[in-house]
Image (tube, rainbow, N blue to C red; front, side):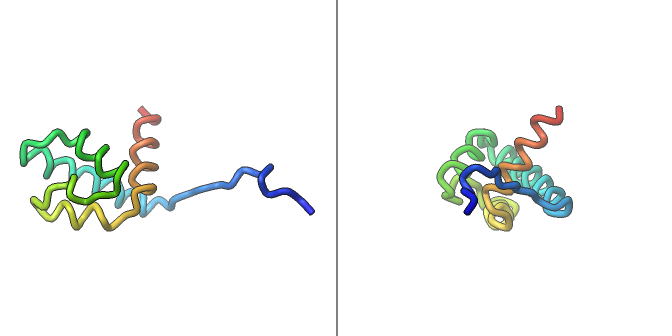
Length: 84
């Protein structure tokens, strides 16, 4: 019997979801900025807590961000950061 604790699980997200995540992040960032919020701080609050009230409802941003799971958004943010 093998111990699964010795293996590393692989997590992947398809390219279409990455594109969607990028668009969602860009759109929500713009909506937060337009309303005068610090988009970075608001994203951090949302990602850490899962509370959608950190995201403005301006331009439907609060509904848009909830189309993806927080882990999908985090993956896109980290991938983009590391690629630069």
